[in-house]
Image (cartoon, helix red, strand yellow):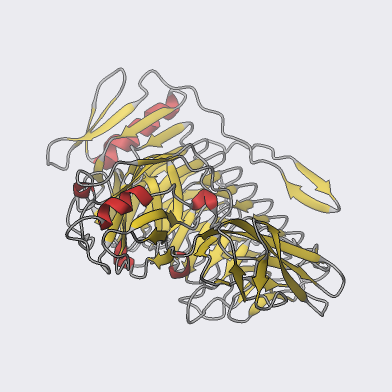
Length: 637
């Protein structure tokens, strides 16, 4: 079957080519037999594929699914559906040729698992797709086992247009996670206009997602962690390919989170007019030294022209840094790269940007100073408040800074109002807004505010962060407890879960009144779906450590305080740490805990979060500096 082409509109603004939306794949007409429902027969290696109408297919998992997919293609398309459970191909794999309009649908990431394990000296991809168009793979996990083989991937499209891969986890592969390959000959002429979104690729030895000689694709909203190769690779074919040196042009890589890529987080090689937008890339080059967060390169005398890099964060948060540059444009054959003023490339091993390109366009010119006044805080009248801010600027010197009170019931005194970090003093209780302004030598200014709640004298304030990875955990539906995740999904991660946070050594005397308390999270990803949460405190005088035992968190719910409702607004900025990421007041529940006869100052409390929807926050194991923090104030009788 010949591949189908779509068209993606391009426009020119301010002299820069920009990619429009990737064309959506129209749904194929379902054949009368759709959907096929695949099920295992008892504990045997026999499977059935039962259609909506017609005879049931019986045989190996490989044979029934391949036969169903071929039949659906001949009938105009349709769905093959997998329920919960593990579907094991054993030492085999699916080989699909010339499919059209077929959807492979599971019950959710981690709920439906497609797996195999093969050591053949050939490619053994579970999804080995050749010249197949308008295919959808969604809501499942793919786990390919076997020894390393550099071209044996988990999901491989050798040709294929208008494919959608969404909400798919790849947790194992002999090589790469997901690849679209358009370099072949014959009927395999292109792999264009495809979408990979909201996927999770981790612990594979090769690249997370690769676009090879593949154009006008979208990779969006994916989480790519601990891969041995590139996080996302966009590149040309080799000089020996059937279509030699064919570039990957006009792709969009947007809104992805990439951590611990073995090579570069995002790599564009000898390809043109690609858009790298709003990604967060951290801690790359942990397997191959001197690689970068984002690298744009060229080889074999092939150009990499007019690529656009905007609104990205590429930084290294490790104590021993491995990510060399935030952005590295390595070749003079990369002409007209556009680098936006809204990227953040600070904190890397070698520096922010290394530019060996030709006619690179730096949009910022002289950028305004970037100011972060720090998270909102609380204190008491009798205590000074340490202000810990951050200011970055590209010049020119001199850079001046100044603190001021914008609002509040009384004057505020600063130890040094011209210092970035200083101490503020208050004489009256109330709510204050303080502003830090930074001005460069050209007169460009930036500012940020911090809200300070000041309690009457005699009020004690505490901030207790999570300091051990075992103290923030997730319990999945079914009772499995994970204590080593890099993030905390509040509360849906393929399935609804219970999130538990343990705060030890809480120095609150017995009988104190907790006048305010909240848990401050930091956003790890953009999450905007409607979310309704309930926050409780375990009602015990000394909460036991969170263990890996089944149902360790949900078993605590019955003995907890009344739930406090929380419907957080959308988290639209990665790294945000403000009121939208803060729970409502938990003071009443904590007052109940510290009033108990078995409470002693220095004991531990556990906060539990349940509900529906999703907000994704950093966990200690993912970013210790952004781990949850319990803020509280108390008074004594």
